[in-house]
Image 1 (spheres, rainbow, N blue to C red):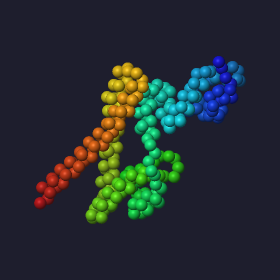
Image 2: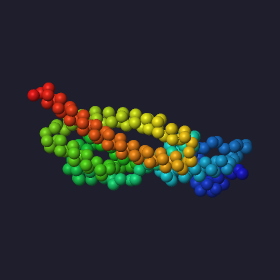
Image 3: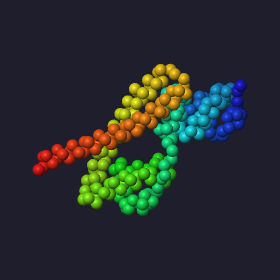
Image 4: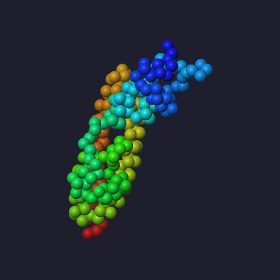
Amino acid sequence: MEYRIEQLARAAGVAVDTIRFYQGKGLMEAPRRDGRITWYSDGHRDRLRRIRELQQRGFTLTVIRRFLEGELEASDEALVEAVTTPPAPETLSLDELASRSGIAPALLRNLEQAGLLLPLADGGEPLYPAEDLEALAAGLKLVEAGVPIGSLMEVGADHAAAVELTARRAVVLFDRHVRERIQAEGGPERDAERELLRIFEELLDASATLVRHHFRRTLLRAAREHIERNP
């Protein structure tokens, strides 16, 4: 069956402009042309429904394209959803964060510029997870103990850069040695989806514990060596 663009829009439950937008983004194949008339197929209708389904799960168009092009398997959906659309945390505006933390907004902006404070990427007013209050309180303890805030920010920025690199390498390892292995085993799609999500959540907690313990041990060792060098 073939459709004019208005008929396709009604069949798929989207606006005509939405179809044209998806075509412009390369998410849909070009329609068949018959002179000045364009015709769409059931494949286009199914593709539109699939795009809407993925959008309703909160996936970006970039991620949707990877699903449509087969770069991500259907069994990846739960894992991708857990990574890209986690439960919305309590958020605070910059002024609210300043008020509750006792830190001036100007200093919070400096922390953000140093990569130590990251707003949620929602495209609107910058909002910050309320859990950042705990990290800010920990930083204040160091400042109150006499650590210069400028030096503390330099150390924090170095740490953030190192953590960013480590996290990216860890993601590649998970993708290569866990995700690809499970999918290569060829089990039922739903079983693979559940298994991927279960392992990801377990490894996320395990990685956080490993990093925390490793940093504490490394910090204590550095302190001991500093004392030994500076009696």
